[in-house]
Amino acid sequence: MRNMDVRLRIWCAVAAVAVLAARGAAAEGPLRVGMELSYPPFEMTDTQGRPTGVSVRLAEALGRHLGRPVVIENVAFDGLIPALKTGRVDCIISSMTATPERAKSIAFSEPYLRTGLSLLTAARSPVRSAADLDAAGRVVAVKKGTTGHQWAVANLSRARILVLDREAAAVLEVSQGKADAFIYDALSVYRHHARHPDSTRAILEPFREETWAVGLRRGDDDLRRRVNEFLAAFRADGGFDRLGDEFLASEKAAFRAQGVPFVF
Image 1 (spheres, helix red, strand yellow):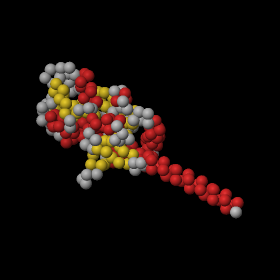
Image 2 (tube, rainbow, N blue to C red; image 1 turned 60 degrees about the vertical axis):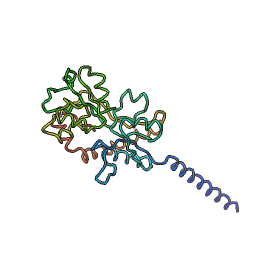
Image 3 (cartoon, one colour; image 1 turned 30 degrees about the vertical axis):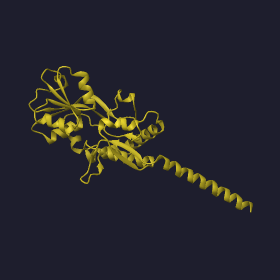
Image 4 (cartoon, rainbow, N blue to C red; image 1 turned 135 degrees about the vertical axis):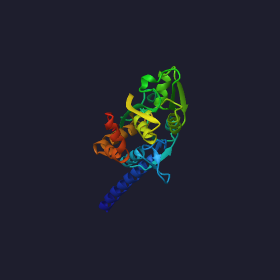
């Protein structure tokens, strides 16, 4: 009888631990990842409207590492930080540059990608480098809320800064010769030039180095630690190399041709 009691107590203890563990996993719930799905090949949708791209694959791998299902929340880029701070999303994986300004309101993981600001210029524009931008009569397109926008405001006093909500609109201004240049990251500059080879030029060498990182709420130290552990393991396992080969093969070749280090 006593043996039965002991076994019963052990069984009850094991069952209680299992229930608590299940409750803990349920309490975490889905990992809600914020990104703007309009930035191929990083954040985009496929032909059936499903999220895909480098950042989506990265988010899914992070979810597997954490043991949590992933929900992608499509949020306009300038709304991502407010969405994180208000709890709509748990983290941001959206090609976001880790800047000192942003770090005043949110936390960042360790960097996972190295990039920088580059120029998509109109084919007939005299602009050959960032040093040529700040001149009377120059028109420089930027996307609202990006580091290119911030850099232009801080450094261009004589040029006219054309602030646009959509990346495609900025590219159109350049390809039609209405703007001299569009300030954006080097990967996107290459891709837009590839779509408009006759009307644009790609100056891929970054004039300002930047890194991308996962955005997190300040004080969420446990999630930040686990995200950093994931990024280190994912890199060591060749995950970033595989993403580059799948989504960025032509970009890797173009960067090599211009002698510019690749991003991963």
